[in-house]
Amino acid sequence: MESIGDYYACARLSGAPTPPTHAINRGIAVEGLGCILAGLWGSGNGTTSYSQNIAALGITRVGSRLVLQTAGLLMLILGLFGKFSAVFITIPEPVIGGMFLVMFGMVAAVGISNLQYVDLNSSRNLLIFGFSVFTGLVLPTWFQSNPDTLNTGISELDQLFTVLFTTPMFIGGFLGFILDNTIPGTDEERGIKRWRKSVESGTSVLLSNQSFYDLPFCTNFLHKFDFLQNLPFLPTMKSLAPLGTRL
Image (cartoon, rainbow, N blue to C red):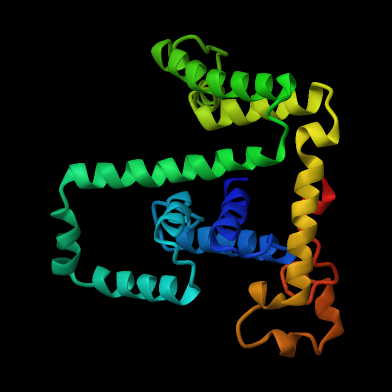
């Protein structure tokens, strides 16, 4: 879910149209492949999209893939030489802290910007938003202060619940999802109409210029084979409708 949100946020900040279904599928597939390779090589972490990079895109206003590929190549090369890597250790902690404040602040702002589609004059929406955010901040703090509250008799289950109930994003997101789908509200009030209109406008731009999410160098070649239309992660996929049109 985080990765899908990152894709939409990245498209919004870079001025690209809404990602189509095949681009979302391809992104999730590549992240899964990266996690498999990381596990085979004994890496301590999986390969996934990083929300802080989305914030860096919004701050620097640079969304060119060539720039990011060049930066990644430089990181790989510098990682082979310890002396160059040691330069980053000399960065003062206050500087790193200030950088994180700006980057995480941008991530939070991009997430909150999704509320532009809903009616914030509606008491229903204000209740859902306020209750979800406040509970997501308070409940994890309470569970951290009272770690022995959960005791199901199964240690693994206790650990699972502890992780979930001490994660503000899960608590707030879960409550917001439940309340938004149980409290009655019109499509216009919930922002579905405006979201669909935004997705449709992005789809029209995408259909007029499909190169945004094409694979480099081989898209025209792939269109020569009809059977590739059945693969959901290729730009030859029959439908270019973004995920948002299914709401």
